[in-house]
Image (cartoon, rainbow, N blue to C red; front, side, top):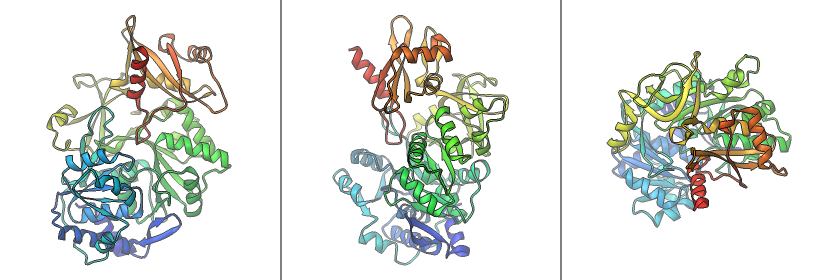
Length: 505
């Protein structure tokens, strides 16, 4: 099934329903949205785009991002969305690796990309795009569940990014899991695109299209906490995807403005570690509006979910442990914990998280070696370490490469980070290992303090000793004004390790 059939169906029965919004302004209803996408599909076919061909999108968030998605899919092609924060050279490499036939851009990004690639670029704000979306329509090109819909490139913090093949069937499975495991959606709701549409926020677009919800893109085209709060209050009920760092910023902004998040229905958070201290504060301020998901590009948004009730619960005897988890398996997957050889481990033991099911990728784009390492005996080897409890709640430890081995004992950085974040002066923290002749590795904590406060090593050391085993406490604390992050808001531990190596030299 071509995932774009959901747009075709909703346009027939609810064509007059508002669909695409830029800030406060409705720019298209569902009939107009569908007409523009079908016209774009016809134009792509006229340009020689064949079913299965790849078409890039290198653009900031805008309503036409969704028109591009659905026009590409209706033509039977596959979208290659590229994070707008990437350098033009990085975007050009992705277009080359994916052999994209052309690329839709916003003007600001297209200017830099034009110097890096010879592929055709079409400005979504230009006359050519306007003509492509206002001409004759093309019928939907049939696709199978196994056909490529989205070529998703990983962040590539340890090398060149890999292209994850996301099929039409994977998008459908993730979408249905959203309704079952994350949050119901109705035509009264709105999806607010605060996070990049090239990633998790865009993955959740199809289910909101299927249900006839509105799609609101902030005028800024990016993430501004004040803008999100204002749009939600004016046009709620809104739902949105956020990385944990975005939730932290939203809480800070809302407290400063004295706003309680009126109009916000649901914030789905994921994409990185959410620390208990941060989510407890967010729930205390905003109320029960939060759902956590855990996924990877290789199983997009669909490995596990921690329900709204679990995130907000403070009555269960083990509520804090559950809040530290990423919830239970979503409906279309199975989760297991394996040792280095892939053998299953019992509940409570830490090992590599393994996943199989409908949302799991068929493999990486033109990379059979990486595919063979990641897909074993039908299971996706996530590279994340974690444990399952008797009730099926999955708790992440760390990426396998981030585990610190000191004196022959495994130390999981997240455990140390969680403890440090309970200190009132600690705003952000990241823990890494430093080579040690005596112990193999020492624990080092990089700390960002709350503005206006100070915190010395002795104070932090005493706090750690009061809350966890002595062998886990950091041997050193490094104060930073901010933590280095990649374009998706994830902390770059590779940069922190590099700093330690440079200091040692």
